[in-house]
Length: 359
Image (cartoon, rainbow, N blue to C red):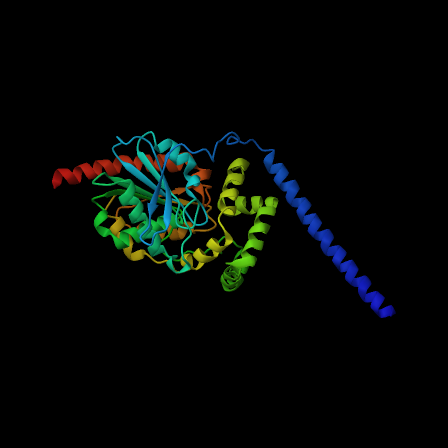
């Protein structure tokens, strides 16, 4: 009996120590987030969720409704289609849409199962299907011979590569320019933000864990936990997505909410798709038109080295490495990204005019 009391006493002490440790971690998180929120926040008044374009629904080739929105003048000389990344939505193009609408007709859209688009059957989740979806968006929102510049961030860049693989005839005719941001044609590693010793463990354990939470009550439980872990989610999003520690807390909150609104089941379904992605054969097709590749020097998800190697495989591509920028530079360094897109538009229009003159 005395031995049992000693064991229960030890167990109680261990449980108490664990609870105290967890409490200390939570307290530290709150202190850290509190200090961050005291920093100057130039984006504090930004209306990220305010929508100003005209909504349109595009049906994919399997009937999935794709939510799109058109901004800017119909009389613009060029159209720009913005393709967002994994676990995001068209809202992340907030800064670019606002600025580009002054010089172009802008189309944003939600990839299948993301944002306000319809959910996909599991067997239709692939990069090739995303390329087919982009073809449908392109045909529905920019009909005829109106020129288009395609811009893709992360998985959105992969979507453009899939389109080039499926419809090479569009590049140099309909598509006159491409901007690829924080994306690669192969070799993407979603564990890249982890410390090196933990990466092999995550690569082995990650897919089964994510797949196991990909449906039913377990996915609901995971989503519920994601909604309640606000301080940890804030710190994780800030670390993984951005390179600059002075990034606006409002921007971090906005991105964290966008990610949180992507269901766990969707994240689980697309995870293995990113692991298998390989569209290197499509890069010469993209090189038929002026192309800019942007890489964040502190991108923890897509190695800047891989981005640079990709740029070398696209004939004539310009590589821009943004110092201090992380993976979601479209929100972290929006002015640099927008300037690069506008400069590319100018070169693309000039190149298209030259091709017409020589035809």
